[in-house]
Length: 352
Image 1 (cartoon, one colour):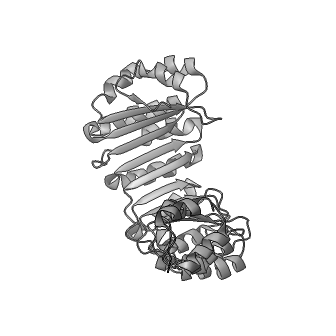
Image 2 (tube, rainbow, N blue to C red; image 1 turned 90 degrees about the vertical axis):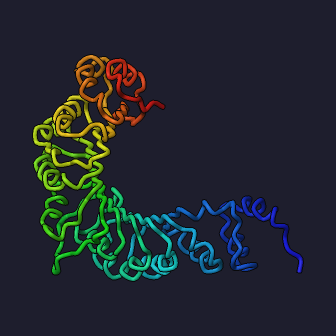
Image 3 (cartoon, one colour; image 1 turned 30 degrees about the horizontal axis):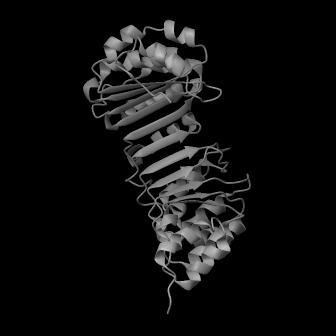
């Protein structure tokens, strides 16, 4: 039997691009066939109503593809699609480590997460579970129900908002392996519930809090005080101008002896206040500090803050990194960063 030259397989299939019919036909010829040049195309996939049937054809015909998928994003908008087409695919992707849930519309109900996904999540061996910032789940209970189905979960990223907390008839038991929280949601709401778990609360070592608002400062400070001893990474990004300044006098990281990575993002006045508050509390020799400033007026930022004084305090740090971004365009302001770096000489610039 003549065989197509192996050195040409990759070249031919690369010209197929996203021609699912041709790719599926290749799977019919040899079920273990897959050109090495296309491995990367299957490591991270997004499943939507438009492409889910095509992808099901591919994984049905080639047993190699499911073993390559490591990162899956689901964009669904109905129970029937999830039950009939998405879940059958998920149960095949046994090596998937990261799953992002992003409902397309507000029609997703509790039944979708708990009954439909419960057939797939335990078999995936997920390490990372993300609820996209645009998620609109009915309640926080839906999110926690999904997380509890992942026995090996290490990180949970939660965005979006919920109209209500939801009914927890049985106290939830989050995986003991959970050590990372990335929150871009209502922090007051989530952290209050999380602290209510008491002895059932997982030990969080890596904490990323985004869009901190002024009304959330008290809750954030209370949680940091409770979790300080276990923290290895702490990232605080402030939405409101006064949130950082109000949090600074409440920041208590004296027990964070294992803290190795500290990140602040926000307006300069608040970030400087937070840095001034925590520097005396930390062993800087083992800590890397990242400063991200949001500002549009370069002259005010360069000359209105005590960068030279801060330079003396930060000099013992293992590493200091500085970035300045425009809050509207999110583009780097290298001109402003360079002006600050002439005074904050211990820092490295994240310039691009």
